[in-house]
Image (cartoon, rainbow, N blue to C red):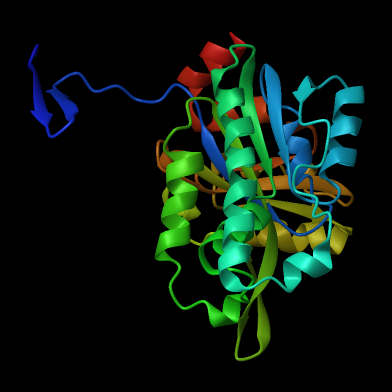
Length: 283
């Protein structure tokens, strides 16, 4: 141990070392159908929370969470509001791309201010799907997703601007769309947004709501045996929110665990993924 060397490559310096530093924060991607608690999870994150509202209902949700005790900081105006939607929709591709690049610079400036503000310990992007759509418009203009055949550049921009520089707890919420096979729903869901995002985050979770006791029993049958902590039968009941850890690179033993009811908060989730990080933020 004790190896460290620094080298210059062009105008950059790179240090190689046998001391491996790991992040002391979580980057999470969440997905779920409407009204399953996606934004609510963001309101339970530690410290003051820097909120980036892109979803039309995000501000209402954040205000409700603030009344319940969450410390939320967000822009006072809707920086994603288009003053003249018709004019933007009719823009030529070059003008539309410039419009969205200028808009994204504002988003990035707010995001960077959150990163630079010590009292802000956590950041919420609500929703990541809308932000990724805006990134695609900046690259291609107002084309539909069906007209876009190359997603590599927008994905890289999303990663370079919002994932790589992150140094705080980050939750990127997503709506979810059903997965179909042969025009039939499979019962599975996928994120509406950047499909590569799950490869870049610390963990990915899926939200659900058990509408009826029959629905609760179906979910218990599907997921109840996937993790020891799921086997409390009393947890699986109607009118309960839940979230399921579907990926956790830093702790694969957490995959499959379900948090239900009052457990659906960031403190329980962080403990399930990393007891060390939980101790740092919650003591």
